Length: 235
Image 1: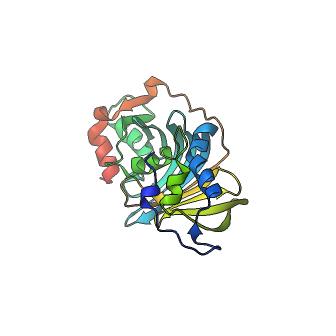
Image 2 (image 1 turned 30 degrees about the vertical axis):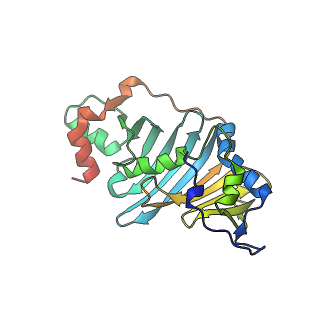
Image 3 (image 1 turned 60 degrees about the horizontal axis):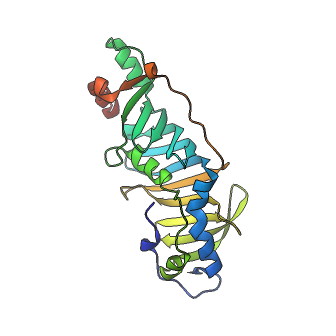
């Protein structure tokens, strides 16, 4: 994941916050995204702030080691037909009941999932999942760079009953990190296309097993492209 520190603000001198991070806090922050990788996976709830005509909640499990996951989707706008998703950095499988029914009336062989390439520029869903998958790195960051970039400690708070420190990397990026530790409980940021504020809550760290999908239950999007486009457009 590209470091977020390039977006940081200049540190303030206030001892109560906002203030620049201490060396100990910078050490903790340098481990946060590696801790996600080291924990292998987590349960997540992703809320995308509404933009005109759109809103989305994605809840499921993410495997940070293999960069993949699965989730239930609740959305409005063009993503509304998607009820479930299995995803990786290469492929997205979408469960779209409306598409399944429409394809059946057109004589298409029954299927449960439609497969398409992952594309964060073409699909809002993918731009959000891309941020989720980016909350993991295989090695710690340089804590000195975090201090020099002006990352700020804002305040003490809590997420789902767990005490946290809230750190700000920029006006758009905040990390809610377990007090005294390196576990990330909440990420506040933006979609990979930088046009959609999001909040991601992480809990239940540990290995994740994706559901098994039979090949016969999957259709390639190219085989139902016209129907797929019609469902997404609401036609």
